[in-house]
Image 1 (cartoon, rainbow, N blue to C red):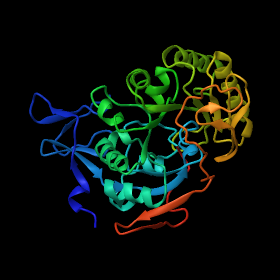
Image 2: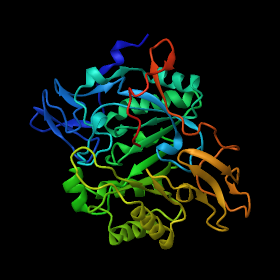
Image 3: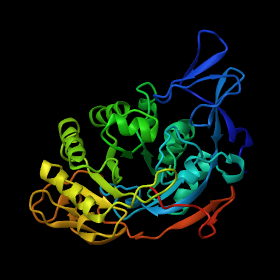
Length: 377
């Protein structure tokens, strides 16, 4: 049975008292919320209770689903394998275009959440034969204590871990958080401060700082997602500046996914034209980025992986299902060029399956179809 003492109100880390003694300051994300007793931070799930920082969603999830790892999206991390995905409630950004807003903006924590300890989640991944567990749907940074403990439990059982995140975390907190992550997909939402301020209620520089730190200071495999929104961040000039920054600061082998926007939450823009995604991908490749993809559209050619030297198709993708697979270990089977990423000897065979599951503390069993939104990264 679940230990009820580990559910809900859990002592938080990364905070300090403010000088007046009546408030505390959160040091987890760059927002650095200051809270008096009873106040919650912007993320809603971190709260000042009696002068202490409390994470109010530890051990609570909005649900569990087995996905293909390509859905995170990660194209160079255990291709074709299955991943147990879950998230909690709340978010530390205020994106007007949030594609998972029913989860990330939820205030009905008690009604929406299932209970599961880190050990139960790790055991579920083993029973479901998942290669990894993904902290996703909402940003795991704001529930870092729960994510870190779950990651440790997964590693004890040989299960790898993935953070799907906006990268909005302080230099103080990120070493401990990323020390237990094997892979990450970082959502680089745009490449202007104006976009981040007006559409995300956040700032660009902390995200760029996280990306540079991941590349230079860690061994975490990471890929970048850019949700391309018409009339907001889709200009050729902005895409060009972003690609140049990636090349100059991260190198040419970090994969980038240009994904299609659909109208959701509070932003009314038309869906991203397929041609815009193609243009963005072409710009990235022409700039020198070796691995650029499109997403949220059907495009086998531009979802597949090619050798940057001989240009042969190495991993064919039809949505999330793999076709031809021409890697030998981590090398092109044609010209032996090393392909960056984390690969096993053989591709996985999970395909495009989606399996909602329920962890009931004694066993793991299929969930009800449609009970969990698993459509976002």
